[in-house]
Amino acid sequence: MDQIFIEEMRQSLEDLRKNIISSLVVSNEDFKKIAEAVEPKDQADSASDDIDRKMIEAIGSQEVKRLKLIDSALTRIQQGRYGLCIQCGKGIPQDRLEAIPYALMCVECKTIEERRNR
Ligand SMILES: [Zn+2]
View 1 (cartoon, helix red, strand yellow):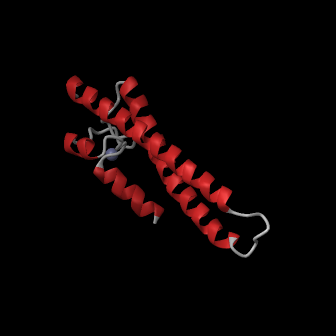
View 2 (cartoon, protein in one colour):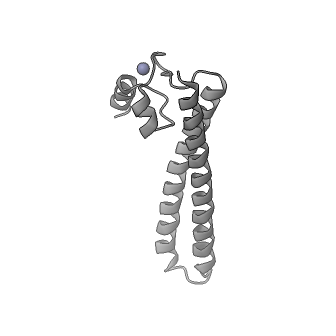
View 3 (cartoon, helix red, strand yellow):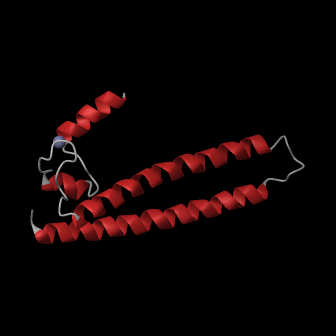
């Protein structure tokens, strides 16, 4: 695979990584604000705050998942195996990588995996 292309992908992966980390920090601050807003004596209201907290956690865990994929993709670059499907070893098309720089599987394997998870 084209070294210049890989370098571009590495750059966008690192940018994505920074964005996710800073957005996680922001939601952490929101989380803190919600936690501070909950008055310990007021038990009745804390239920709705609990929902907000769960929502933030859900968003956070999705981002953490994406962060893990980005890290794996960066590791694959270091190993010189970036752009090769982790399932079948076939090359992942460049336009797919441009759309999802942290794609680790080719479309066929990804489809099979999603079907299996359903
Ligand atoms: Zn594959």
